[in-house]
Image 1 (cartoon, rainbow, N blue to C red):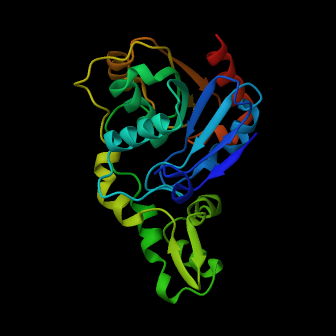
Image 2: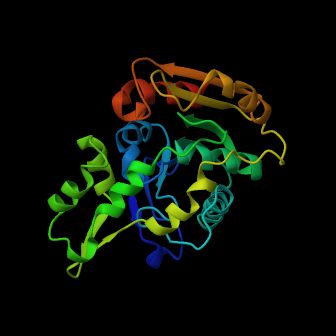
Length: 267
């Protein structure tokens, strides 16, 4: 069984897709910054053989609601409210990048809602600004005078050289009634960026539940110097490394990634 629910139809601020048996344990999958629920699609298809998977668009991303306040705490609150709307008392979580930060914030603020958590290639630490090229690429697109998606791609090229990255970013571009726009809340995300790369809350106590961090071997998002902060907040955390992968480890080696997630959740 699967379903797509749009917020205006469901009364929820969260747009989601459900896959797998509704009788199976619940797993909530959360994508990263600038993404949407489709980003984890290959892995979700494998996991839905064993779990009732809810893939979410983060607030201010995809088809979820745009909000005035965008913080890790506010997004965690909105997802927990969405869980209540759907009568989901407790769930496993899988979060990549920003989605991992939001999942960690849920664990710290609402531990009763969390069973096991898998965090893909992010730590609960503060990061330096590393997305200026992406913001410049978005801002280089003149939406009012845009004539095609190819022209948008051409405008982005001076700022983001990798075609795969531009293709990912351009998934946010849509045309309705002849008008081009960004589906996500671009202005809000740019303004909120310092809050999104900040450390997770440290004043709420530790979350003692089982947690797995999966690191891309070639990625710099989880580093040895993050160990103490990880364990201070999540003392029962463990780490797995997928060799020869970068930040998009779930897309580079989806079978290995999905296998690691399944073994952890079933342990």
